[in-house]
Image (cartoon, rainbow, N blue to C red; front, side, top):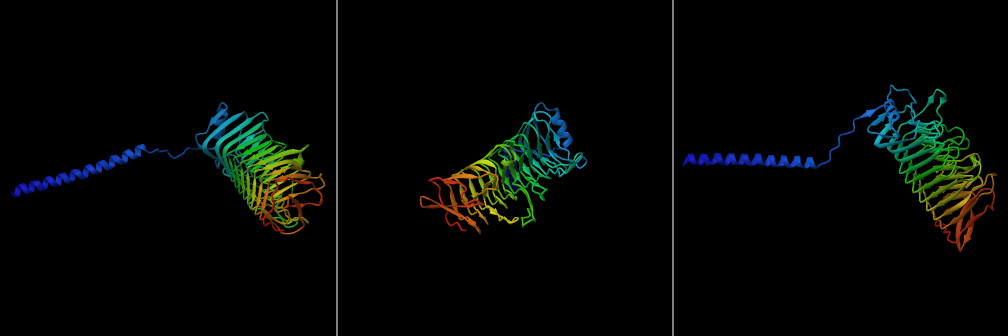
Length: 414
């Protein structure tokens, strides 16, 4: 009897052990099954230098598929930019090209070349000097070609001496679904139309920007105080036909335009700038905290100007708020909202003239809420018992046409 009990106990022990082992096996099998169904991606550990990238692009047949990250090696020549000498499409596949503070990234000096950049991150460009001296223009991309096409590209922390911290172009430039964050220019001691930390479209180049974010550009600005302080245009500088749509500008700084400056007066004839369905928020500048249009025709529609701030004081000139159009401009503003903007003069909008021809504007279906101008004269005009407020520079009869749907100011202070 005792032997039988011992035998039963042993069998029970064996059975329990088997059950434990089976359960461990089942758990392990289940874990393996789950892992097998998960998507596992090997971390991208492949990185090449600029010399290797140059060779690979040279050997490509017009379309280059980037399959690795790139970083400028400390042992490579400073200011080495990838030279593009033929029409090329670069599909970046989410990879990063890091100039590592040593120079430019892409350089095009052939007017017949079209360059397309897709799905890339371009960072830390900082060209300082080459055999000809200081590199003034084009931090990440210097483009003196036919057409530059930029799709889903992130430009971050790129710097140049004078113009175009991220992009400098003299050819047509088309930008879509891209981000410009923390780019800069260094030369700020004179007003030579320098600036464009994000994009500088020079020599009348056409510029199209859509579905993009331009944020935090022109860093560490020194605000004007009479004859002291930084002199620089906006973070996007246009000199030819320009269209900006469905884009977001925030926390950019400048002196003559915080976010966008249109320099129509620099080329013969009236250039045009179109801004539609966009947002300008919390930008600041001495004149035109968000947008400064000089000598261009303009059409601004469906756009919000919020929390922009005129800052500083020039040589006898107080600062100006969100939007400034002058130098013989003419254009229309429609379906726009101006909210919580501040300045000494024209917190929301200022139409001005500077002996370069009389400016004019038509304003239709716009809303002005809680904008604050701290001093000087404002002009009130009534349309259907509603008041529109503008600051007019020098000439009190500059023509502003207020359409029937023009909406006024709620809680604006002057």
